[in-house]
Image 1 (tube, rainbow, N blue to C red):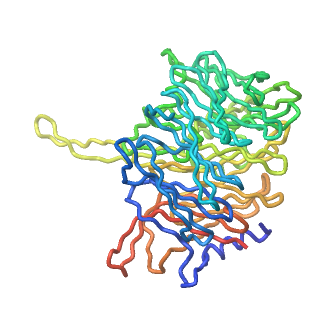
Image 2: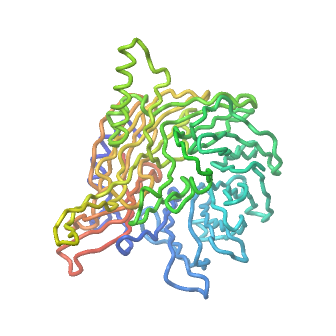
Length: 548
């Protein structure tokens, strides 16, 4: 990536890439309106693999999944059908230079196991399937591949969390026990690829206001080597997400999000249902689907107030450091969440009263109560970069006339769920000691959807970072340098397949780096073209964008 990326972003995205017939390089598959059957994973300059369930039944309990490989010019290379149990769910993908790895979970009992890992080698047109088993009612938390082994972490309703692994060469299985404590919740697994150590980050939720964070270290055969118990953890601050990054020689850094829990409920605290209910999916899932009959009063999605970090130094777990979002530089300039802005006003008035008395609020820990989509931690020049996107449910208020027993009319109002409103994103960098060295953010405007997915992505170019996302048939981008805004948010329209296409609606739009100077934008769109006999189509699309 070159220094002129922001300028090139506008020019080349507007022109896109044209095939020999003069049309933009865009791939489309018909999709029923409101559906989301298609998944994809990029394979660098080898192309893109698209996979989805079909309507074809291979036997009584199985359906065929279609695996389609397209090349760098979005042309089909090969196509295979693979039978899978009808209750299987796709969860996560991992792309390496050698192969693609796809994780599926069967939610029903299956004699072959309930965990399936597919290894796809695009150039050889080869798909290999591997099986494993986790407890029947368990839910997958994380998935990783290292040294030809698959690692799957899970949480178990009414049981203990755990990790299984199996060799993709010999099929040999291993299991890793996390803890015998009750109310334990696995948050992350990570692998030290050089030393082949396995790390499990988990918390024990003692009550609604007390939890404790730990990291287990295992050697390659699966034996527990050490447990890191992080010190000076503040009560009523709940760890909502956590990821551990091993740095070798007994050092590492754990980071994530926390919320300030002020619940005074006397009911027995159900740690599992609080975090895993019918509305909340673990933050590693590719999509966060919310139903149209969403009810906020039944949504126990954890709310967050900031980032935290803690270092492991020479095998010793150090103090947890908390960084409240309200103290981020210029946070309220790009934050558009109404409730968060109200919290700012309340706290500002409190500080004014303290100031009049010659006092100061040392803690200054505002409860913003933000729902967040958390990204995987990324590394850039030795710094850990955390990214999260904030959203909130939105309702429409309607009024209708009702009549009493005597026929007298009176108005009644009611609310209907209108979708989830994205408001902004937080991004922050941490050094190897766990100190936050910079923070910034990006506003996310006019995004209202019943489907939630991670939209924002970032690329690093020297000291600068470009934040970008795809929504409403437009790509938004912003360039920052640590705390400094280099270029404010700008927008450019995605090119259509035909010049007479008219964009109507979209959902699950996203954009990511592909290879060399190329990016890939995907999503679902409704399009009208009055110059065609069938003037409306609903599609899943892939668009290739060049930035030079």
